[in-house]
Image 1 (cartoon, rainbow, N blue to C red):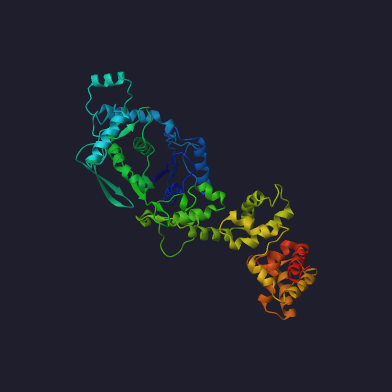
Image 2 (cartoon, rainbow, N blue to C red):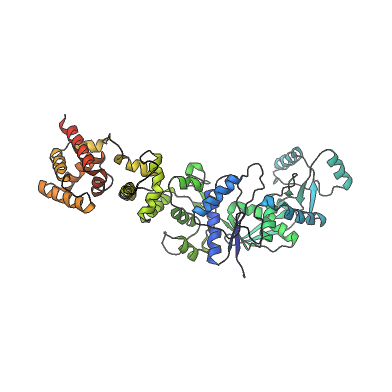
Length: 486
């Protein structure tokens, strides 16, 4: 194949869905792997629901995920325009050709007539479909119906008693009988083409070589193949990737977690983690490895390893992956990404000085080991921004141990002469345990409880320098007073 051209063609009726993002990713990986062209095409013929705001959201989400396109509505290209509403003239010429060749016809049936036909077929336990009532209307009949004010649609004339075979790169051969399809609408009464017609003309005129899309489009494919054949257009290769299911094996929905890319971005997921996760939804790499950069995915991805079976959206795995990428990312980058969450919580003002940013880097470095997404940052760092510490039940039990006043008072004395660095605090804590002749747990657990109100959390050698000598002393005094009374 001389050139490899794929497209992602979303409808701009809302934010980019997680399933759409996966389809885009598979197309992107295939294009980059083969040195081909990745095209963004906007299918905006749903005039009531489509918006430029949704279109912008889709483009922003794709770029955030690291997927840029070679041709598209904002970039142009040799096969533009790349919005369907700007291509109506192109569709019209193909519609006129089908009408002239008797491969399509005008249909004047009303919604009430169509509903009655569907109900009659269902009563007879037959597949609901259009039975071709307007196939052979005379010119006189058409004129009379138009005089009544009826606006016709254009229907494609489906040949009878034929089998349409879809050669699918994921699912193999899938056969459909034309007698179960019925003549379908290709142009609505307002002159806007339907999806099944516009997508064929777009893919053919943009010279798309591979159509990689969700399994739910498989049932549309025989209709599209019939249009390709009627117009003598070359077929692309088809690959229908599996549905995404929740862990309960039902179709992915809001109850399984967020469904749009922008929601994951707002919750503090890193794009690298989401891309890695999406790639593993339906694609199985060789070996046991699960961590992949975009470059590694481009190198290893192939349709041959895309599974037929539904992919399960495992939220726990996404959280694990995101936590991994948060820990691996440069601390400065994670701090920059965490800053809006700290500002939204009221912990940090709008202007951040260099000194404050250095402190925030230390803070984020101290807590990022235990978080799975950045929206957790405010809750994990709250103890560093409060004057009213609350002790958990476990912390209160620890503070009741008899050695606690001695440990906390001795620590307070040593803090005054201890360098507020990781190494300085580590050395001081070791010395403290030796001098008091106590086990580590008897020393470190009360200190943690006194300074944080919890028995788990960041390392003490991070907590103490972050709080500083004065705040540590204040908290130690409060804990001692809690134990011994005023």
